[in-house]
Length: 537
Image 1 (cartoon, rainbow, N blue to C red):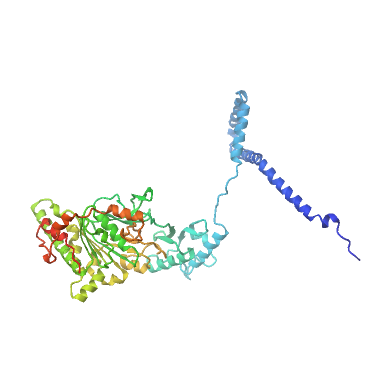
Image 2: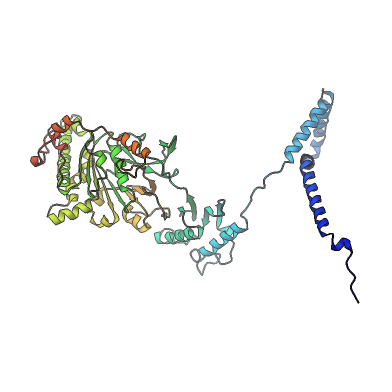
């Protein structure tokens, strides 16, 4: 039996039906746009009516009569006043429009992707936070993650930015190795390439993981608002310190939290040791400290690397010497040791006589030694004393004599540092990309953050004495004589440098190379000639 063909309207009318549907859909959308105010007001009136019914149902029966009388009085007042009906209508329509407006739905919980991420993280923590004989484990395979994750936040990309974990009381949170395993796991599961801060509450069995923002790298060398004896090593997180300083960041001025190192007679961390990787910014830190120290004191610089990074300071007011060679470095450090002894003797005599300290020992003296390990190898090959041996007197007695020592070196020279340096340099800085073990070997404590993979120059950690480990970003203080330095940073550094000595002053302060080291018992005016001495190999 042959099939009959379909009616013409069904076989050839598909295009017209599609056009009709599109036309109807377009007309409906246009009508919705035109009638949107009416829809909003209608929705608002419905919500107001519902709220009125709920209010009336919640009103006690003994108070419904007075409430009804009050509403009737208001209606009568609007009816009797001029344009009262119009005012009442406009008021009701306005309230309905406000009540019926479209609101962005409030997110009350994680979405499907975020829930899957939290469940995956919960399953990964089960082997670390559970034991076989626990009758009611918080962490178990297939358990409820909402019992342990009491707080969480996600960014726009769906990655965790904050997570609060409740862990069992039997977890060994007092052991650094146990905490480190949890932190490494959370770091890997929450996303690498970011820095995380971990706050352990051993008393309450809580762990809070927070994603840290990047520290500012655009802040350059400038005059910081500090008191005499205070040096800004760099900048850190806002909740790590209880102080801010105003700084110029480009064309704006803002307050940032600094890492302030205090020196002087009452300082508990009178000397500083900075360790870093090549190119990590230890020389930048040294230049920043030198520019700040020149405001109130004199400095001696020994450049063990011999690269000329401190040539911009040569001959400046307050810069007693900038040495690169072994002979000049040893002579300068020997003079510094004698100067420390002279200051101690003068201070002791003044105290015994009941007099104030002489003016020639009030001005602080800074000894800046960059990479002493290199000079140590040269001294050993030449049969001369190690430069660190000449620093024993300034390190041990520098706080009472107003002498501050700053040493910088690289990790490959860390083993060459003597016991005196390790004991008296209680202010520590680590710069560059390094592991948690390397940070702990220098600072004496592990950081509460995960080390970043890619760090800019001058980025690291600082610890003052027995205080907490702080993230640190050193202010940009490049060599102004380097061709790679930008013009703005070059002018910023040059603007902080003191004036150079005149030719007459240089001639008056010059002495023969064989003049030797001055008698430590002589007053400061007798050693001015030696302060201008620059000896090179």
